[in-house]
Length: 421
Image (cartoon, rainbow, N blue to C red):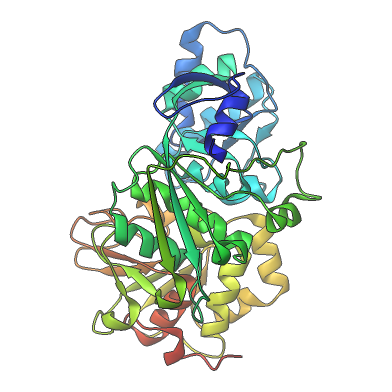
């Protein structure tokens, strides 16, 4: 079996599962945010359940429109707070404790290797970086799981992606996953497990792995996953709030497709409007002027991402025709970035630094685009109208490219501005 099949089998009380098989599986953690949780809460109350299955296995994180951007957002967030109080939910993260959910839960050790996790948010697949099965579900599935502790699944087929060769300077997890989506298309892994492996993955730090698994959904994947190893152990040790299990894939496991990539040939990559699969080398897009740069999101808002952007922009200024918005993904990341002087670098460069929030990624707030404006962002989606006006455009890239672009006022690469300090 593959690692995905083993985790599903273990959680459904079976010795094995096969692709296409319908199963009921016990969940280790359920999460929802200020957009999706209110629907789940309403549906939960309709079930007639007297209580949630486990108040310490449900996480409510107001991160999309929080801190509350308007009256409607305030009402949504209030529902999370009141439901959490009523049912004594142990993992409710108010503003101040909050972070972007998919950065916060791994950081806090609340998702661990071997887990089965569902979330009412499509980027729940992020946690596969830890060797867990994690996938997004609908709010009604969350409601049922809150009552029963279980969810139904169709076991997915698995695809294997093998990465070898040395990464070029500034190239990281974001470039690998954008290149992969550009290769297979936004439905190239539809309802499949995307298993990432190879020598390049084994040397990839956890933040790069989280970025890759985060965007599995942009290829239609049911989940993204990486077999846990020494990097996983170093991340989980001393952080994990629960015991964990390392699962691996059998040598004779069946994959519906295997693809290999020579990473020495993968350039700094940008997704052009209006699909993540519309990829081009960043160096070929120098004629594209940009109005706004965003560094942050559940994809690239971690401390290492901020360090990369800061390294490029240190001692320089944001182009006068550009606004740059930097959003640390959690309070802890914000604090560490402050201690390291990263925030000062951004502010000296005339960027703005926001409290943790999903904000502009989904066209929420803190950076909405006007008609005809273009943004380059470290976020995960660039569909029509994703960050504001339907006649705006979003380009996706890694934090180093974002910082270079902010300085140049057009899409650029770090070598054009960085001194390599």
